[in-house]
Length: 392
Image 1 (cartoon, rainbow, N blue to C red):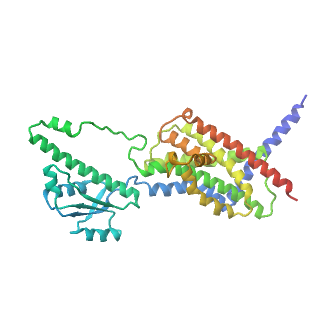
Image 2: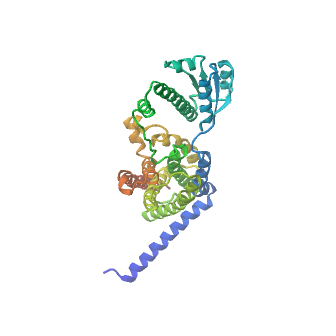
Image 3: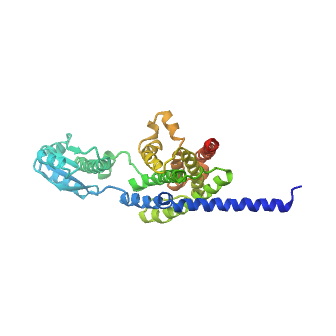
């Protein structure tokens, strides 16, 4: 039989070593200014910066110019409708298209509306009344807002003229309305009701920031030991567990601040359960920590991870399907993205925080994160053992 006092003594020693591992990890973070900035401060700081930049959500009052060669009541009605819209601001009304183009090339406006001199005549005769529209395609958000506003106003004016024509022929107003609008379109925007860019981009940005700051921070801490001539840290199960708890603790506090304070201040949609999000983000942070421990084995100099890993942020966002539709990816590129915790982390976090999903709805993402956690921990452990055996 195992002596009880021996077992208690062993457990006490194990617990003492565990507490010492946690203490050592906290000291490693707070003694390294770079790691402290990345792991503790960067996430809420970057979130505030991005939220401030995207806080307005939707672009309003895009500067445009209108060239009215028709100068009739119909063209003035169209111009007034454009001026009253929230998306556009008529800053100039030049006399010719040449003047408008000069304003466009100088960057003073982002769109030109050209109304030809036969606009009203064609409109009242029932023929096609064309207008010209020149937009800056290099600014997609500005392009969309101007196009949406102009299309809305021209369709409204066309429908009004058609309604007057049908009523003038003796049809009732309701019958004329049914003719103009035979199919009633009832639109409800789910999850992102304002159609704002901030509500769309902030959840994936936060998830990617967690991965990048944690991986870089872990790599810097590991490289700092080597640049100071210290022995490579041995990754025992006790040591790994202590690290996981430390980083889960730090990032849980940061995420709580972000979701409960910053998110609310800027009005980003949040419909999820905090309990479900806490469980999912714990698994995600564990997976990212495992990736960081594996990547940290390859760096000898403290500055190297910062220089290398910062360049991967944009490709990581692309692989996650944020900046480009995932359906348009080649299959091999999609599966390559699945090797990073951020891809599954983004999918699961958006579903839970923005769409109100539950954990049962994100089981594939949870399974992927668990598999990645054990896979990266195994890789880190094997590399650590191999390198440690080769040390003199």
